[in-house]
Image 1 (cartoon, rainbow, N blue to C red):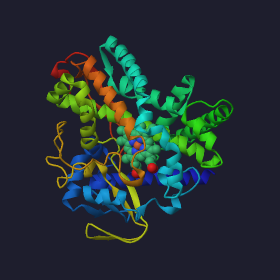
Image 2: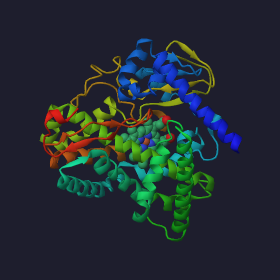
Image 3: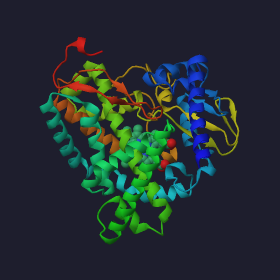
Image 4: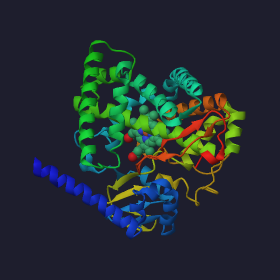
Length: 415
Ligand code: HEM
């Protein structure tokens, strides 16, 4: 055991050193994306990658795609999919190929239809108003921890039927798991992750028990009713984990990225304040294109495919850089301009495309629109009041802290 731990730790630190060396010394763009410069501004790195062509080989023997057309094709074309060997215990349907993916996605789908989402709107509005009342009383607050994060937590805990008394634990476990999407950063991180996974599993298993005896109108009750027929007991915890992880931190960052973008473009913030109901959904769409919370995903070629003039061999991985595709000049006019009045251009890829297209897209859009509408209505004089700290992650992008004030802050105080 001790030898395995040592080997794991050595591998971990070796990998970090390799990335730092490739990024800082050799200026390898894909490594830079995992380091501070790429986290601060990945779009500049994407431009450099794009200059080398829409599809470029990676140091790991796969490909990275920056072009809209290439990414959209990889995400839609059924000759690409998840690595078949990835179908292992603990894997959610996000990591599966049909037919298992189809069966499990179909089971979760009814909770996410636009009609189902509409049922949550009042709860979202009530929660947002409560949070903004508290923040307004303080005058200055962290937009992320006081507003953008608590709102999706309330919605996802409601949806899954997590009792209010466990909501805080639930959010903590979720954060630990999301923090591992980019890989394990240290031995301490590995230990925290294992503990969070075990605690979350216990919480879900306890709820399965409870809902078998006392079913309610929530996803967990729906899952236990389908157990044995449409879903195996082994698939239940991974499904719940997915809904937590996919539905929580992504939406937090959508709301935070939107506020950050709007405060950096005051004329567009003022336009939203003048017509919050009409403009909020359009602002959400432009933020999803311009600064998407999920910056990348990947697929594996299930057979040999020709793409963008290159031959992708069976088994090779293609990283689809969603953040780059959404700013591809071949797809969008003035792609680097944040323009909430934009109408031309193809649908952005923030929710991916094809069979894994985000199941929670309607929910995320509704949450973000409610958040922005109420923020603009209640705090039209909102301003930044301190430095923004970014998350230490590559796949997920957004601020960790975004200090704001309900009244204008002297410029000198905002770095
Ligand atoms: C702004 C918020 C969100 C963003 C940017 C986002 C983004 C994405 C992306 C890019 C994928 C595809 C990943 C891939 O193909 O590899 C995805 C899948 C998924 N998302 Fe979201 N998501 C958001 C919110 C949500 C919410 C609120 C939920 C539900 C509570 C959710 C549930 C899912 C599920 C279940 C999948 C897997 C779909 C499948 O494999 O068929 N997401 N999301």
